[in-house]
Each structure stands twice: as structure tokens, then as C-alpha cells.
Length: 240
Ligand code: SF4
Image (cartoon, rainbow, N blue to C red; front, side):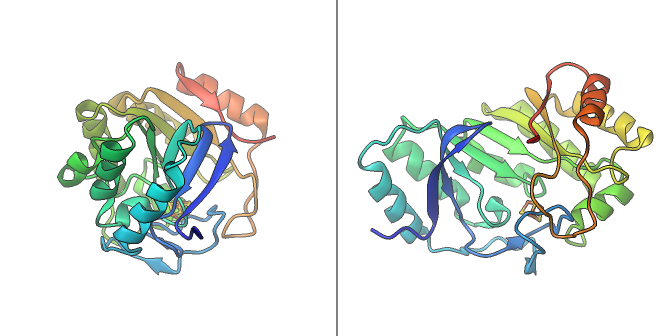
């Protein structure tokens, strides 16, 4: 079978051997992050739709997993924001029902984790949500979100998700010098982390060119300073 919606397995430092699932097939996202490795967002939206046919997805997963490959995770990531796929919960439930031996991970920009969709996330073992800003002005600068998304609401939603879901949560903060590393923002990050209570905080920075070419990568020593400032449970995951 030729696979269009799944890729890998890839060996990732964070997730180990992981089979990627792309639920969108194009650069469709609720953010247009300056650092996005996939370039600028073609479709900036919060509309949840069946961007890729669910039946095709489950058929591919079924075919690939029939041989019982060794995997650490099946990870929902891909070209844009995975939760934009309206049948996310159905696909995750399909995996749980038919291949319960595999752990499921979701890499998300956090914008769609609202109270209404928490039940769709109940089969996940791991959620890796991004939080690159806490102030509204920095949020707009780095993530360039769809117009009605508010960072304050995202933080509240993440805290609720952490409380209500069984999945582990590793909060990813992508840091860029001069954009989201000023002291005021760092103080706000510290406060947000206390509210969300993730199991881990992972600091990342640019590994490949982003959507905008003028960005700089944060030095390892600066990331270490920020890790110390943010406190326990923080690790650096950026490549050097
Ligand atoms: S949320 Fe992820 S996929 Fe969307 S623009 Fe940002 S980095 Fe790219």
C-alpha cells in the first residue's frame, strides 16, 4: 500500500521511534508562526473539517500496523494543527480499540484544546502542547494566530486539560532571542507554568530555517539560563 497520510517511523530524540500521522495534507493551521519549518501557513483557520478522509487514514494505519512494528509512539503531528481534523477523536479511538498496545502522542499548538474537545483526547498517552508567549503582544508577534484566539484562554484551557486528562503533558516553549526572552515575558512564563502544571517543560529553538529568514537561534548558554530561571522539570531539547 502507498502511504499518503502516515510517515516514518522516524527516530526522534524526544519520542523515540515514532510513526507520524498527518491529518491535514497541507499547511493548514490556526497559527502562522514566524519559526515554522514548514513555511508560512497557506490556510489560517480554526474551522474543524475532515481535511483528509478518515477512512483513508484508518486504512493506512491498519495496513501499516498489521505487522505489529515496534514503535514508542504513534504521533499526531504533520503539516499543521492536528486538532483541526474534525474526526480526531474518532481516529484516536480507532487506534485505541484496534491497536491498544501502541501509545498515542499529540503535538499541538494548544489553540484548540477547549473544554468541548477534551473527550476526544482521552485515549492519548502524551500531549506536547506549545506555549511560546504569555503576553498578548508577544503571542501575536511569534505565533501570528487566527484573529479570535486569545493566549489567556489557551493557558486556562491547558490547565484544565492537565487536570482532567490522564495523558502526560510536556509543555514546549520555543524561544527566539529578542522576541520572547525578555525578563517580563519570562516572569509570565513562570507564572503560566505554575498554573498549567505540566509534567515537563521542554525548551526549544531554531534548528532549521523558519517561515521568516531574519530569525536567530538562541544560544545554548542563554537557554540554560532560562531553564535555571524557570526551575524544576525543565529540559533543553534544541539541537546543537
Ligand atoms: S503551530 Fe506548528 S504547524 Fe502551525 S504555524 Fe506554528 S509551528 Fe507551524
